[in-house]
Image (cartoon, rainbow, N blue to C red; front, side, top):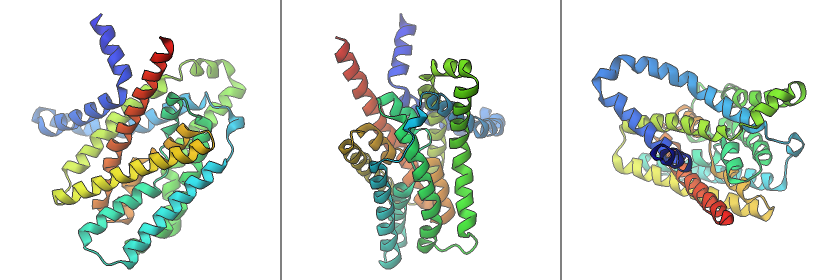
Length: 324
């Protein structure tokens, strides 16, 4: 009876439990001396496990996708326009308006959160909430291409780096995103055509993608806490950058839902604009901007998953009320 209750709780609150578990795991390895010898092994395991988890969860999700639905839609264009214009406005503010260096990082953190592409695993949450994973996947591809072009062009104007060329940065971003996004997509398509029995077996287990995402989230949460703890910035500046991440998160979920809702894809629109590839965003901040600005996307991990947890709770509550 107790075991069933625990399992039920873990299923209902996967995302908060994952974030707390990742945070506790970081402090456990950071503060307990007896675990010091195994830290290199754990770091190596995490480096291997994270892409494998993302690959597996996307493969399970894409097995459910109808490939005929993978086509651009009007709301995709509006969301891409918002990302582009908001990034350009903030970059113009940073280039042409003199301000204290510490406060620049607040706007840089917000800019990274706005132009950052949709998370490769956003389709998992979208499917769980009842949205269209196919529409979300199409937008994910488009938003990653936008970031790959816009970031190398715009960010060096904000923080000049002579050693980073456009093509080098463009290819680097693509190499970080597209293998992990396209390989499971192509594999799901090939399995559907050539090995339908295997495809059907995976399709019957597609709900496991959500729990794989929970494990990946625990790892990302631990890494985020590590970067925040090791930061040397003044505490009040970190708080301001984190608040900028909160504002951009709320605005993007809200606008995504409003725009997507106009085209009867409210869930997909909200997740497309609101759920970000924060690991890539942190890398972009470190590469192009002041490293302190990475606190913005680092805190975004927390904000977007609080919102996702709330959405999943509302969906679960609505489903229960229908069953009564």
